[in-house]
Length: 179
Image (cartoon, rainbow, N blue to C red; front, side):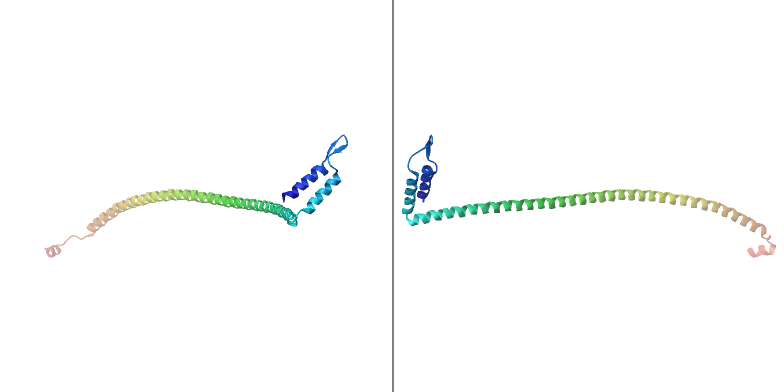
């Protein structure tokens, strides 16, 4: 198998690239060398020729497979890049939604805290005002009842006095009944 390559090298060195000096070629006759190389190739057993042909074909297949593998790897790399970009975009979208939800929850939490604080303040103020109103109403009722008591006391005194004035003097007969 290496013999075919050696023959190709001999042909290249002696025929394709002969040594020249001042327009003259030194070495063997090119036509004669070609003939000898052709005879050497022809005299090689058929198995060697087939093996050389098989090797060339397998090298061609390996090179084609390498090219296809390279294209497959490149395609896989591009697909992986596309998937990574899509995943990054999706991750960015999810993170943005999470940030918005977090901000919403924080705002709701702050609003809830403020609302609760205001509610507590209003309730405390309402309780304080109700207590003061109740005390004021009780004080007012006490004053009214005290004044009413005084007025009723005067009226009662007037009634007692009027009754006493209107009561007839007891007669001796009435006095005897009482005894």
